[in-house]
Length: 537
Ligand code: NAP
Ligand code: MG
Image 1: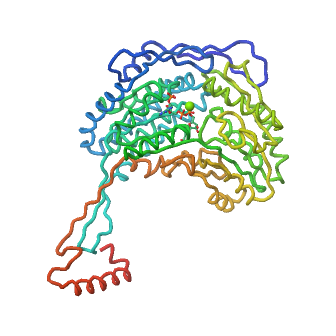
Image 2: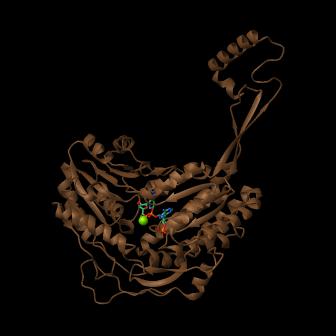
């Protein structure tokens, strides 16, 4: 896959329209071999957002295919669960190396399917490698049996064991087609599970590449299955057959996934939308905050669940911040090139472009001020939208509270930090936030008052996201459960308590009458409460 098209500065006239290279047939065949079907299926075309040209097609799988995929994963899972965890971890170690070595292929696929610039695609490669390395190193420890306090000190030996759930289902979105396809799957596999992945309709080839690499890294054949096609068709049969479901996508679909999981009494993990705020306090370094805001608002053209859509700036520095921020936004290099250098890519689909346009037009019609942007950039590509900054946004505008999921941000001012915190928290979402200040203690204090799953102080999103030892996920309508860290792997296990009792039973000391037994146990309970160290005997 070669590179094509000129890189285009944001406001320079464009002379050549970009075109993307087709995926080589041998690559297509290798990837398509990873889709599970039990019959001929209608094709679904996959297009490149940079040009809307067809890249290839994947089968539109059916409920029957999902059942077969789960059956195959289940059958491979039995031997995998008996494989020592250290051996399983070796696969993740090799995965880390392979993703880095073969990154050019992944970067091309991500860019072609999702329309982002290469630097943003690289974030996904780095994420996949970081998560693989982290769980390869720490996973065996997270999964190891743990000794717990026994009922009676010295007499009850209690341990907690972690068993795999069985087969875990994954439904992934299109915005981070590599990260979101594989980084949750890796810990589930390490925990001894099989997996079935349903990537987004628009980005299946990147997901298939991620799966192909897992087999190349030594995963036993059959353990990780892929079904391609429509979420509305494949979601329910998948939830009906798996032992746990991990969903990343919109709050609306997430709610329905949660309901279906609830009916089956299987666990679920839901990573949903956000309307993330950045607070720039009066003692912030303005240049750093401007850089941070540009990175936070426009990564993957704002199609990032943790990207910033609301900027709250302290009145004292608001004029300076706004002027410098708008200038920096206007300097962004829009690009449809497969080479490095671009700073802002395309929207990933026509429907995404339309949502962005509707949000901005609605705000404009209701009196918002457009400080920059607010129009398509057809000169760069059919689905490009100019990076857009709005002020004077009011509650009646759609983008005030709804997630735009595009290169659009609103700026408003505050004089009192309490007021800024209250406005930031005034959202049904609670995914990510960012606080900028010269005083990190103040930063931590404000952070703890924000109702969100991750807060970045003097960063937009990358510090918390890449701190993979720490949990990540949403408060409120932004989700349920966490990825990363201990939670990110133990959620894929059933925990079992095994308590071994020695010498005397817990409830009744042999030979004692009921009242003497009660008095003796009362004395014992008081002693254990008075001397907490006894518990650990
Ligand atoms: P979406 O419509 O919910 O789609 C996400 C996935 O769900 C796709 O694979 C989709 O398949 C599938 N799906 C659609 N309808 C389904 C159904 N009825 N049952 C089961 N699965 C179904 O989300 P989107 O609007 O495309 O993606 C953007 C959203 O994802 C944003 O809200 C964003 O914030 C969120 N997101 C969150 C995170 C996070 O970590 N919190 C990360 C990335 C994105 P099809 O492609 O076939 O429709
Ligand atoms: Mg959708």
